[in-house]
Image 1: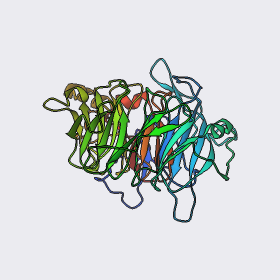
Image 2 (image 1 turned 90 degrees about the horizontal axis):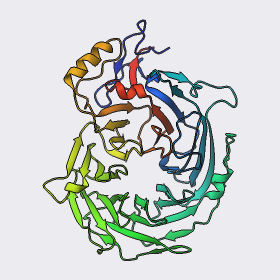
Image 3 (image 1 turned 135 degrees about the vertical axis):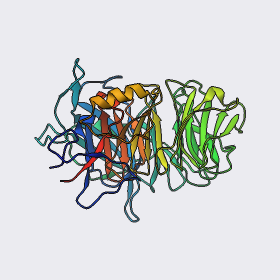
Image 4 (image 1 turned 60 degrees about the horizontal axis):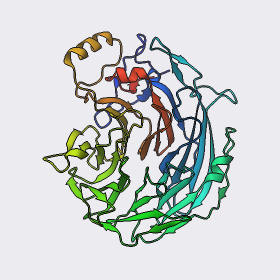
Length: 442
């Protein structure tokens, strides 16, 4: 029996700081269930997924009522001799806490402890063979059944997974067969493998892919396939790490690189970047273009720092709107919320997944009042940035995190042990100084 943070009979819990605190003999991490409207770890997925994407569905554009259903695609990185595959999956019967008008929450089924047959969270997985590890996978916004994969073999491929998505059900039955499928398109024009790939949100089928040899190729859709420009966009001095299309301008995209820069490109004006700026003091691993405040581009670096750049100021004195050095290791994924313009999710190699709200500012008077009300709860360290709203742990080596585009507040993340699906509670946003994880002795 682990002690609850608010329990007077339990040993007082302490906020856990990765990279700062160490576990003593007999100690173990314990998450605070009051900090979540929903949390479940799906571990029975076979090999670890390096990359995944949430697939848009027809169940509703904005969904708030439990139970929830989620569709996704994910790619594996298997040991040598074991076949890789793309997993097409459905998570269903995800039950959680429903907020009441008084601000409290009612439980609509606790999925993490509900073992009654037919009422617990279920996962159905279809496997489709893929040559080599899947470095990155992305589902097209306009046609979600079409997905692009970047493989360690150096090939970028486009697949039609519609038949597998349509065959998924909430039975939770495991499909152990690895199915064969012929891709719609295979591009072997990259000189090396890569990770950077993005579908254009405004032009159906338009795609960019970037590799470790600094080259970016443009895919233009035709009536039946794609024309891929063999003449690449070149402007970085090191590998292209990530790509993001502008959410409002169909011909503009951004790239990040191991050369510490972010570049802005216009496909109408040639193969050189329009703007290139130093963004970090180390490799810029990932970027995210804000679709609600389209002047903002967030970036995450190999040194653990996160920056937000104002696109309107790039040509001026400086574009930096915010900079955070909280994480202890490399940033592996970053993504703006599709529902809150100031909210950002970040994953890191320091085994933390964090949520930030850039609209929050420190208020000393408010903090004193808050702490007096929360004296029975866990007290977090004083040096945490006020914009840091939530910290989620429990897995090692987080690789990617994505917001669900149709379920406000739902996050999905992949790590070494499987997929985590979580929805921090509305209380968690208010209690900005309470960590989602504490430690206590059994």
